[in-house]
Every structure is written in structure tokens, then in C-alpha cells.
Image (cartoon, rainbow, N blue to C red; front, side):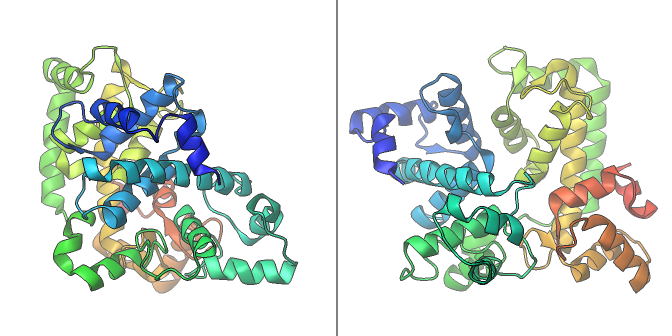
Length: 371
């Protein structure tokens, strides 16, 4: 993949360049950086033309961050100075993989089915018969759901590059449905407690909802919060700045999948935004509301997701209905599940779960949770 040549081209091999880049990333000099700070650096380096646009892909950045802190680092939520070089390598590596994954994913739904896999074999440097391609696809599709997510694709490529490596070589990416179990097995509950969403009660969300409604209704308080998130005063805020606000001000809302949905919804024209990549002052009220409600949805989703693989099986979906106080027969639950699982893969991702609510096709008792 010529990673070494790429990194030399962008000045990421020489020690002097690395030191300067670390100082820019760790601007407050506390020796650690968060995901929000890393995302901010990538956005700025690409926007300034120092790095190419293909290095700014959120799924790849998330994989690079997770790989750095869980495998190459010490297991906490921060990237430290000694982990910085590993982070840069991972950012390049996973963005390279994302380019291939995105090219194969012709449906642009961030998952590859067997037809896309067969059509995209040449992009992956493979030459296989249809039967061989189906067998190869089955190796990647660990849960047999008929689709391959980016996390599974990364594990597959790693295994082809280094097939003799220990199965826990990169336990954070080999398979999304097994990573938490693997970490807990090897390091115990304490090693993973920070990487799984703490269970939140509805009472906590109710209290925060009142607080957010008060802020939205009070122009002075709203502007105080806006000036906090827009600390450089340029009247627009990025995803990284939104993430920073959630981490520092609203820890209950610090769940990355929900934050991404809230951000995308806010900037979209369907959500009242103007379609660009920034949240402006006039969109700030909607952002706060979206942050709250998508996080509440994620809590319901995560609470029902018993194996922490961030996808719901039918049984987990039924558990979700029970959490929300919905009384449904087996047939009714199956019908609702089919409504959410539009591609018939047998699993429901968080994006599909959110779309289920947005379409108002879900049971009324569940709508009441976010109404």
C-alpha cells in the first residue's frame, strides 16, 4: 500500500515534523489528546491543503482511534504522546482501506453485500470464481447477516496481510460483535468499563431534557452556550467542536453514533439546515434538540443490544419493545422488525433504528419517548 512513501510525502517520518505536529494537536500541552482534537487536526490539515482529502473520512478515523487506544496504546480513552506515531500510521492505513471499501460499496450504504463483493474483486486485487467469491464473502461475514461492515472488512484485510498473526492481534477490529467479549476475557471488566456506554436511566434523560429546554427558551443562556462551542468566534462549528461540547458540558450525550446522527440531521436540508458541513448559529437550537433525542434513542438501542455489537437481532428488537413498554405479539413484532430491516439482512443498525422513528412507522408508545 506504499504507506511509508505516503507518510514521507506528507512529512510524517522526520522527528522534527512529528514534534511540531504533536504540539499543534496537543495545543493545551497536557500530554493527551481526545478523539475530538484528532478530528479537528485532520479537518484543518485537509482544509489547509497539507493533507489530501482522502485522509478525512470519519469511519476510518474512528477505526484508527480505536486501534490506537485499544491495541497500540494503554487502553484508556486518550492518545498519549508515545502513541502518536501509531495513530498516524493507523489514520493512513484505515483511510487507504476506506477508499477500497467505498469503491466496492456501490450502494453507498456503508455495507457490502455479496453481489457488490463479487463485482469489486478487482478493486481488492482478487481474481476468484463466483463460487470462490461466495466462500470468501462468508469468511468476512462473521455473523452471517448477508452484509459486511467496514469493521469486518478491516479485520478481513488484516488477516490476508498477516494470516499467521494471533487472533487478538487487533481485537478491536477483527469483528465488531466479538471485540468487547475478547477484551473483557483478557483484561477483565475494569479494562473495558470506559469503552462501553454506561447504562442511563430515563430519569437522567428527563432531568437533562428540562435543562436543555430551559437553555433553548432563554436567549441569553443559549448565546452563552453558543459562544462556548464557537470559541474562535467564526460563527460556525464543526463536528469536532460539537463533540468537545458534549464531552465537557453534557457527558450524558457523549455517544459518538448518536452525535453523528444529530450532526448529520442538523446540517441536512431535511432537518432545517442549509446542507453544508457546518452548524451555524441559526441551526444551534435544532442541534441541541437533535443531540438530546438521538442520544436518548441510542440509549434505548444500546440497552436492548445485549451483545454490544451495535446491531439488533429480532430477539434484541423485541427486548427494545419491552423496554419501551410496548405490548406486541410475536407476529406484530416480526412485522415491525421487517419494517426496520428494509434490506432483509436480519439485523438492524442504529441508522436504520433512527430512520424507523423518523418515518413514524414505529409503535406509538416508542414515538412518545422522543416526541
